[in-house]
Length: 214
Ligand code: OGA
Ligand code: MN
Image 1: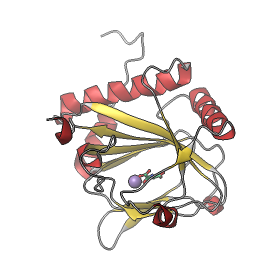
Image 2: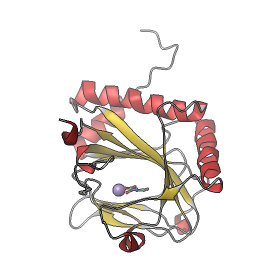
Image 3: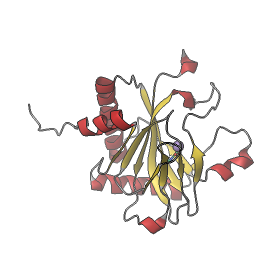
Image 4: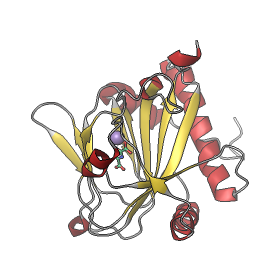
């Protein structure tokens, strides 16, 4: 059939995800879109629009021992053309996942994330308990997604995503511009190793309908 409007082909990505429970894709969006998204995130940072990310803990002073990143939630109505390019590709991915893997994903929550130099996030699961009345009830998270925006990231810059495959094995994934990582939120423990450079990404979770809304 016609290929004129570049219908995204997620088949290989979805096959790998269904086999492994995670997948790494090296060029999820065009390089110029990735650069523009980096600039947009950096602007949010310099404008002081970002806020310290939270954990499930009530005690705020403990939180910075667990994670050091700052975030800015995206609004689906954003008119920024690059943000829209990201969101619409994620919507297309969600539709393909629902169609091919019957994942019943309903929505995407997503934010820009910036780890300052030295920033890290201790080993965790993305479905930690924030209580059912939280705006970001994490139990509804099914699939975690991270799109990295950092040009020229080198191995000695650190900041790897360490994805634990089982008790004995893990992957170290560099947060290189254009790379998308997807993994099942209930299943994969992971951490962010300390970064020697500022580390910027778009983090998201595809969710089923939140139980608190039932
Ligand atoms: C998170 C997370 C990983 C990364 O925000 O929950 O684990 O590589 N991020 O940024
Ligand atoms: Mn996480």
